[in-house]
Length: 73
Image (cartoon, rainbow, N blue to C red):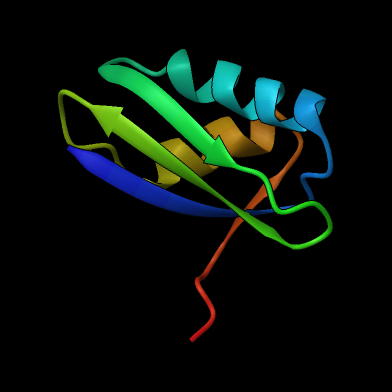
């Protein structure tokens, strides 16, 4: 399964590493691919073997110090 997250507040490679580490720690996560948009909304594609609850993903991102936001149209 693939889940795409929009994340605000990320500005550098360290941010990417922190978010990736927290998301990969979730049970069932196989890979995380982050597309950094410094100063804007970055995206993270999470590939997992099971469905992941939005709250679970949001908490992992928050643990890294960032915020999952809604996609803007």
